[in-house]
Image (cartoon, rainbow, N blue to C red; front, top):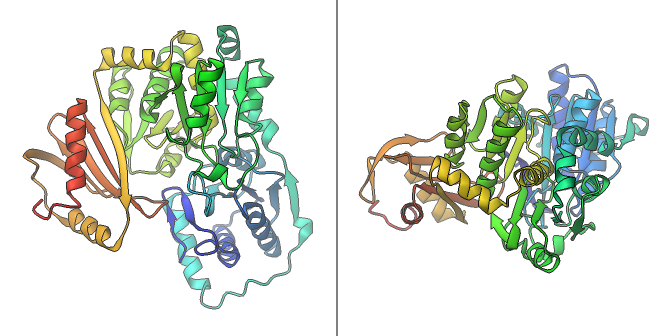
Length: 467
């Protein structure tokens, strides 16, 4: 079975993600594109994981056997770079083989449309349906037309985009000392090189290709950034910047190597762009993202559009011109002046510019923002998806809700799992992860105590039969 979640198809290598399934999905995509009358080449890329390059080659050869022109990246690339390459090539679609921020044993596939956005559900549903039709008697032998496969280097044009967007002089003249951690992933020679090319002093770690990511998941968590924290303390760096395995998510460390959570970082960047860079369009937020973004947007008179979880829901809105900025709590951010897809490199550079221009660290900026818009306290955690937890989740989803733990429920949102909203705007939510066998649990409150209480109530949904 092949299923596309919030950010593509994902699974364990050799179990869910195999060469046969890669060819099957690729053939299904080719059939869907052909049915749509889509012309132009397909751009294929890959990340630093085990077999990613070989999966990409297998997909390219199968596409070529179907008479499709294919442009394959010459090395591993960040997912947002693939997004940019699709639009610049006038391609029919893009494919990048990546396990994103998942542990090393995972791999997968993200599909991009001709607009450079992550494929929406309407497209991936058709691919899944075609996979189901083909899978019964699929013969994955084929004769590739190698003359239809060319190699492409999307790095220069992508870096040129960033060169035009960022205020490099502000960063350079600020004297900021920056530490960079690509977590052995695809942003090596992207984030670090563009900073160096603009004469900004940096210290770089984990900038070699390692398909095992040093034994950790390439996710920008506080634990995974412990080495970056050590480097900041030893070098006296003012800012720590990190990206996940495929470069579409970010991690931030402030002076003193203190972690800045991604939701606060997104709100700070939004506030900065609205105050300093003329951002005036609508702002996108997923339903599991803190309403701090709404509060910041209201202060600047900006409309907020809420979607289900998954950055793919923002893509069509960017293409239609309905959004200028979007953020999701899982460290996803983009600005319409750059790409209609989240980009961890862009996020890191905008944060560096913001800190340089404001002359203050992230903690100081966050404290100032709280004084202006009020406090927001948010937390996300997760539990394993098992047979029992899935049964409880399904039961909670169907349940009627009026009160939880003595608190009145003022509205219920079932667009993506279950979100219970209480008086005053605080809320809790549970939903199935679209990329891992886990159940996500979220809570936001006006005080730290309220947030912890809501998180406790959310956990109780899986333990207390009386609720």
